[in-house]
Length: 129
Image (cartoon, rainbow, N blue to C red; front, side):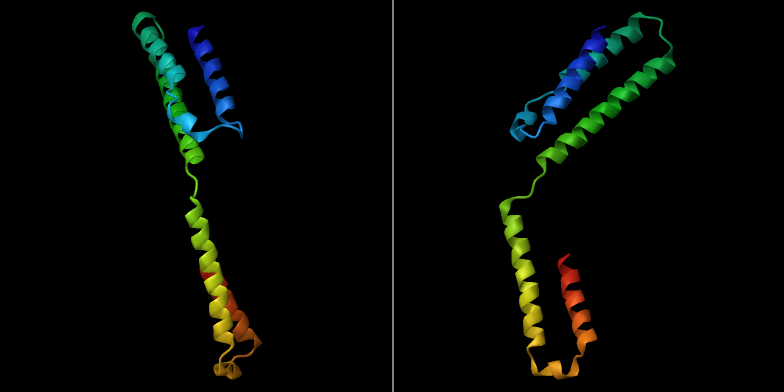
């Protein structure tokens, strides 16, 4: 019953951490106490009880998978781009548009037809995306 209670607390923690109003620095201090409690109980069961090794092994692998998935989810929540990143991306987009305008405003434009202009624009836009 302790494992069940730990897992219910863990699910409550997951629901709370998945809310859109969660503050990311609050996740930093949270330790997987529920999963650690489940592992502690599993260790006691494996030592004291007559439970088949296959069941204990499966329980350990499930706990390990839960640790991994929670780490992935929290790292995804923490990884955000700083505002400078967006400023650089906007600057690159503007420079591509400026380069296209400069390329198409030259006297060499006499030699470019509509298809070649479309190819030039596609290459410039493709480098941005």
